[in-house]
Length: 53
Image 1 (tube, rainbow, N blue to C red):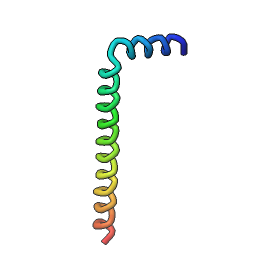
Image 2 (cartoon, helix red, strand yellow; image 1 turned 180 degrees about the horizontal axis):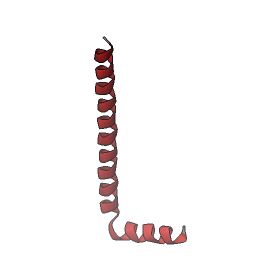
Image 3 (cartoon, rainbow, N blue to C red; image 1 turned 90 degrees about the vertical axis):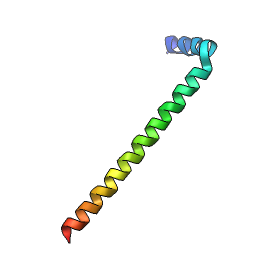
């Protein structure tokens, strides 16, 4: 934990902006991944629905 805190402090001193940008990119990727997963579930449900009929 202490090492992590030191690393975070170094990062904040070195390039807090870079860290923020990285976090934003990571969040965008997570959102895209979640949306893609939701779309796959919807299409799968549609497929099951049509195959039942």
